[in-house]
Amino acid sequence: DNTPATIDSTFVVFDARGQATPIGVTPGFWDELNDRFGDFSGKLLVSSFHFEKDWPTWECHPHGDEWIGLLSGDFDLRMDLPDGHNGPRSVRLHKPGAFVIVPKGVWHTAKVRAPSSALFVTP
Image (cartoon, rainbow, N blue to C red; front, side, top):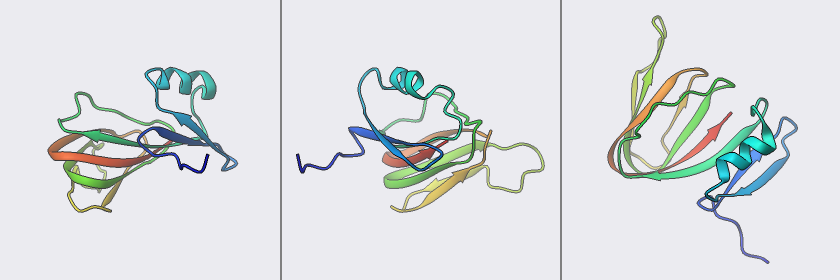
């Protein structure tokens, strides 16, 4: 089949050697990810999400920095940075191609200004 996969239906895990493993996005995706890759140390997940409302929770990634790039839309990425950290606590992503790097271990969430799609590279 010459049809390429799409980031909406297939995410990709890169291991520490740079080997890519595509995984179909199904209702059991997160369980499969955990079953196949355990604690995810030394790996990266490339994924895409579309969101129309504020994220209902905060999230944090203990294994490394997360890269978030805007594909379309407009949202503020809010970060709960520790005292003494010299970075912005909120970054507005509203131009396609704009991105932010969330430092390792920093809790973050999104406040949506317009329906948005973003690409994520998550350790």
